[in-house]
Length: 365
Ligand code: GDP
Image (cartoon, rainbow, N blue to C red; front, top):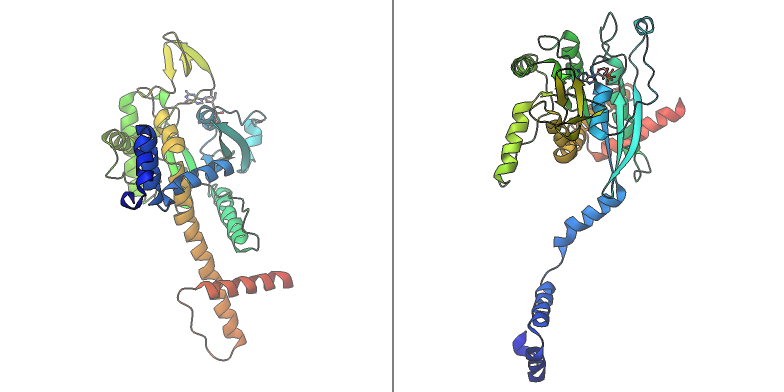
C-alpha cells in the first residue's frame, strides 16, 4: 500500500507524530479484518440487556434448612410470608409446590431468580411416592415449553423449566433414606440434582467425610445420576484446574446456612453463634457453602441451563414425539385398510403433521 502512495503523501506521513503514525498503521491492519472478532461482545451486550433467568428447586424434609440456605445464597428473604404448619396440620398435608420469583441486579446484570419450594415433602407418616407432585410439576414445565415452542409466537417464550434441584439430605442418618433414593431416582432423568448434606455443623469433619463416602457409594449402587460437573478444558490455568478438582472431590457438598450476621475475630460474618463458638457459613474450613455458591452462580449456572435444555428437555421432547407418532400411526391404521409402516424417527415434516393433528383433535374436543 505504501509503495502506491503519492510522494507528497509519504512526506506527510513522515511529518506526523509517531503516535499518529501508529494509529494509522492500526487502522490499515483493521481494514484487513472482517470484524467477526467482535461477535462475543455483541452477544455479551445483548444478553446483559435481555437479562438472565434461573429456576432453582429446593427439596428435602422440612426443617433441614432449605429456606435458610436460599437466604444465605442469594441474600434475599423469599420466605417472609411463610406459614409453618402444626404437627396436626402436617398429618393431612400433601406436597405443595410454591414458586417465589425475585429480580436481582448486580453490577448492571439482571437475574430473574425463581425458587421452587416443595413444602410437605417427606413429612408424612407414609411417604409412598410423595415425589409424584414434584415430578408432575417438572413435566408440566417441559410440556408448557414444548407447546410454546410449537406455537405461532415463539419469540417471547417464558422458560419455567427447572434448571437445578438442590436435594437436602439429613445429617442425622447413616446415608440415604429410602425416600431420598425414591426422590432422586424419580427425578434424575428430568432435572439436574445436586445433593447436599444439610446442617453440616451438626457433624465433626471425620463424620462428614464418612457420610460423604457413604452417600457417594449409595448413589453409585442405586444407579442415581446426579448432576455431573463438566470436564475442565485442558487449556485452563493450573489454579482453575485445582479449583475444579476440589469442587468435584467435595461433592456432595456439606452446607451450613444462617440468616444472621455475627462478629467473629473483629469481623462481621454470616454465621451461627453457639455458646462454644461460631460456625462461619463462608469459611471453607467449616463447610462447602462457598463451593456450592461458586458452582451454582459463578461457574456452572450456564452449564446447568444447557444440560436442562440439551439433555433433560430433549429426552422429554423425543419421548413426546415418539408417543405422538405411534398414536398417529395407530389412528391411520384404523382409518386406512392399507397397512402403514411405523415411522422410525420423525422428521420435521412429520412433526408438523403431528402438531396439526394434535391441534385439530383439541379443537374438536
Ligand atoms: P426448611 O423447613 O427446610 O426450610 O428449614 P429452615 O430453613 O426453616 O430451618 C429450620 C431450622 O433449622 C431453623 O431454626 C434454622 O435456623 C435452622 N437451621 C437452618 N440452617 C441450619 C444449619 O445449617 N445448621 C443448623 N444447626 N441449623 C440450621
